[in-house]
Image (cartoon, rainbow, N blue to C red):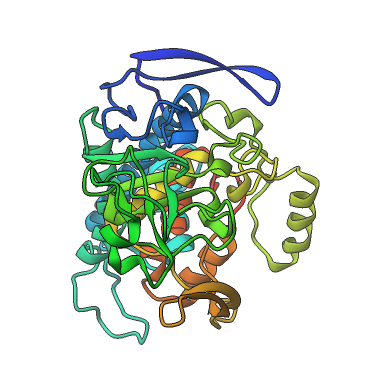
Length: 420
């Protein structure tokens, strides 16, 4: 069982008309959002980009669970690699019967649970096998960790837990919406210029795009930004209301994560904390063994009698700790969302409205679908080589599966642990 930090502050907030009690660590305690991130923005709350009130409380509570997810994912990979090293990659032997020592049974179940989810999300073991896919002896001794694989997975979780969850500053910024940025069109007085010159005179490079973005409350050096103009009236500089960018955005050159309006909306991010949801997770009554079980399981998922990993709370909402983990993978590892594949491994495309720097216009063009969600993350693991290990959603779903360690999530839904 996972335990929260005992040094917690109690916050009462009204969510969806129901009084809920949410607790989170005090600032500076382990797993606390502050001071790991610095809050940026003016005095007008999210209207000026600053996280305050219920928004900040929700972010603090979900951040703690993200830290616990990272810790558990790291520790489970450490267990997997340690067992592989001891057994030449074979893992703990299957106990003879239920009368075997409980520790032996626990290790065998844990090995199968963790390894199954690791393969499901990443497609490869984090340790060397006795033979390669062609049946030839491996170049690395069987059971030894593969350093690159562990850097991409275990290394990320460890960095998050040690650098971002230790109650000290990680020198990153957090914004609640990008509303403080306004697009100043040509002919507008530059509000940051003591001489009151027009924006095209202080920033002549903005003439081609028709203006420049400006925020009075960003740190010096980041108050002006030359990103493309808004696609539609009311669109923000990074929260443009389309696709995954409607929840949260990592802006690398700001060293910041921005939670957009939808990402702060508890009608969208319906799952703020995970720790009290264990009793609501519904598992299959036996393990999914045969292909003919598929239709039955799918029907139970549709009826809500089996819980999917992607929809822990069974209410078609987003999971805020998973969003945190996703954005931190962008921020810490500089990983991009990977191009999506279908079940046969073919690249998925869609029509996107993107800015053309040559014409200074937004134009429709064919772009890659990205690997968001469990199904596309799973396709990436099967057909995408190492892409799953650098796909933020894949990284996030594995950590979520490790958080709820009383279930086997290797097929994307809750199953009982492997039995003797």
